[in-house]
Length: 244
Image (cartoon, rainbow, N blue to C red; front, side, top):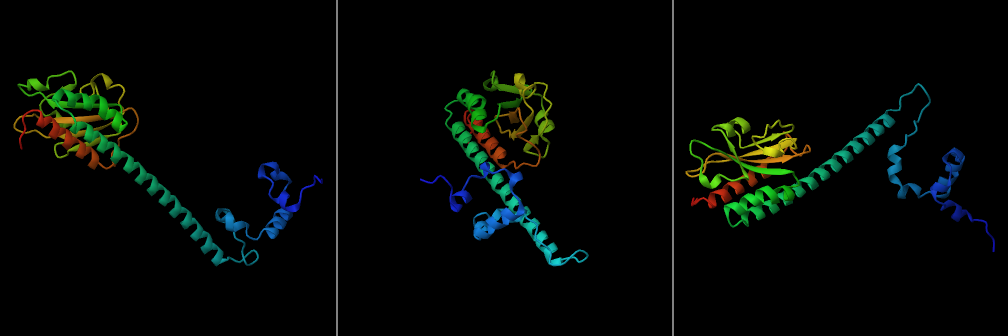
């Protein structure tokens, strides 16, 4: 049996077996001549190739210039489409995580259980490092809110931290002395701070979400954080006799 390779077998040899320095233009031309359908299967290679001009030096081929410009525009559009797809995928992931956190909060059957969900479950479900409830103490803080899992703030602190006219604030590089995140203050790099609105029973408060990475930063959408805070607000109110 002959051990020599046929032409088709040689053409099918893996590219790794060929030294690029040993391939010349004539060999490439002969290969393409034998495989006229090559670019049908490898069309992406055409985007990286320079189209030949139709005239000699000294004459500008406007058609080629316009073609090159269109190729650049197509490449930019493709990159933008990829970015939009990735952003949409990330948004869906965040939305799914937020919904899971909301379900865990709604399943709490007491205030103590709710605090454990905030402290232990919410960080895991949102893929962050710490979640904290904080309330303005006032002159006589509610005894029910005095727990190891809650933080206490001075009167007016929520407006100072978040802003008087805002419900959510995203901070890329937070500097916390322990007022918000307690012992985890040195760990937290970025944070989402959401207002918990007061009612006839509860004082002003906030939900603080912290991450050791740049998870939160200005410019992000705040709708899901706002939604989560409203759910926390309702759950806290439910366990303090809120009826409406």
